[in-house]
Image (tube, rainbow, N blue to C red; front, side):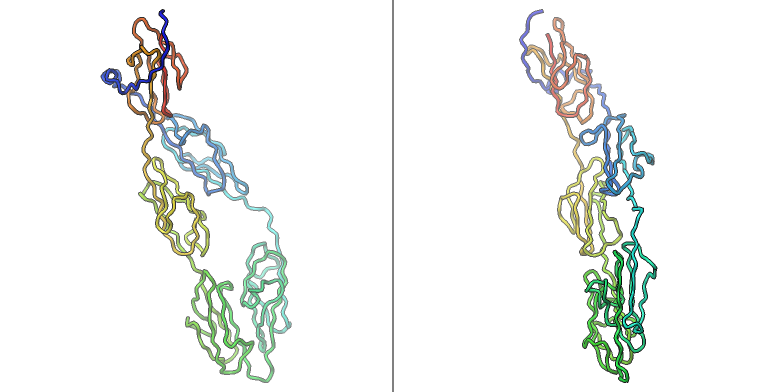
Length: 422
């Protein structure tokens, strides 16, 4: 065998007219590639380990993929759903015979122990009135909200609360407290002077954290027919709805005349904001809201996560926000309409370059099926060396290393193969 000097020369076979005219190149064999999309529900409750892990989670048809669900602290795995049968096993194996979306569902672990606290109410003076507790229990679990309403006895007027109660709540009646410790609270009343035509004007707030009412003049008791101006002021997130008790309507401020002992309630309602989301174009993705409610209290933070469907990618948010961050956190300070914009992904294409050694070798010594200028991810290509008489095929190099002939390779990137002859 005569000695040859090896020199690598690049040939793009798709540019070779001889190959394009070959009848054998009209036969093609292509293996389907499928995509795996996986979702953790709810967001942040756990994670999914995928084996094997491929770029873009794309797999050849028939590939077995193992999914393992792992909960984060305070959560436990519940079941798989989506394009798989419902399964409570933390590890499952799926066969990629189509595009698949798999959801790992987790649930929050409930604490088995909740501390309880006592609430002691004292009346000062003892015959000044009474206090109604809602709910009225011997003890309360941590975090329970309890509403206290002071009701003055005849000849007395409620003044304030003292004890284990925040300063900003001491003049509210009724008042709502949160049980986070044992509490002792005193309801203070004052006696109306005897033998005088004095009357009490007690103002109640509903709900207790909805706002305040100012009285002008501000006294514990008033003379008969004395005029008093009442003005309701809603806290942030609330609106004033109207008066009830010994006063009706929604005029604000309003002037009343003292005609006896009066009890008036200022009614407020909590403001609520709605968050509407949409997808553009339709059926190209999903928007996940966390937390996912029909409406939100003012200043609630909501995380929006755009999840594209197979073949699409997230581009930006539009509407009441204009950013490309994903996920994004918004603050509910008004009703909001937000759109997640997606666009179609162009199929990635890769080149297959054949280099021949020695330089005297001809491009038609290697047959490539199917013969194309570009290939899709996961596409299989068969290479066969066909040297003429007097030459021998030695093996393949470059991105593969084998002497198998013909050889079938799977395209996952721009690929270069060297065919060696002697």
